[in-house]
Length: 104
Length: 104
DNA sequence: TAACAATGCAACCGTTGAGTTGCACTCGCT
DNA sequence: AGCGAGTGCAACTCAACGGTTGCATTGTTA
Image (cartoon, rainbow over all chains, first blue to last red; front, side, top):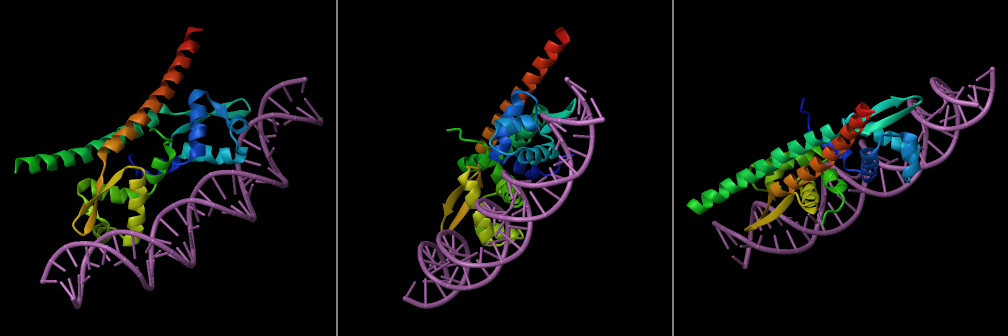
């Protein structure tokens, strides 16, 4: 189930989306509520939320007539693990080369 | 020295850039060499390399008349740690709320 | 030193994406 | 029942971005 990573990081590559995530990290909020705290229209927020839901970083929660959104820490940690794996792999190759160079 | 995360992830939000990173993760390569392996022009590659250098994921290494590029695993792991911190923080808040709900 | 390979720089094009405004719809609540 | 808050959908603008081609420059090496 591990598709390519690019789309998720594309979603994380926007400043406004990070503002949204920061707010949602504190408490669940609706699109309208978020629009009240950030300097962009509600519709812009709605689009961003759609993008974040798309990549699994955020989850909608119906609450009466409004829709609140929740930040998904598990998904974030999953990404962290993938990056860590890749990063350490690069380093492993590097240190292997260094070792060979020293031994010769 | 921890600026905002968005620019780094914007750099990681492109499929071609991941192809480049994957290649560089295996061995150091020049822009021309990369252009030989990927279906884009050398100039496009050069731009991507510029973006990756900009956010510290890649490092240029002069080798005679050519410039090879090296993938920086340490930077990648640093990103992983930041994501992990954020993700677990979100989860901590969630479980705190759950605990309160159960206790009431 | 002459020639070729690699890099660097600039202009251009098409597409994507963030943002806006405007309007229709749907639930809650009085 | 009806009013209003919250949501959803659509069309449009503008800037940024990925990609290209063309040309100038640098530097190795035969």
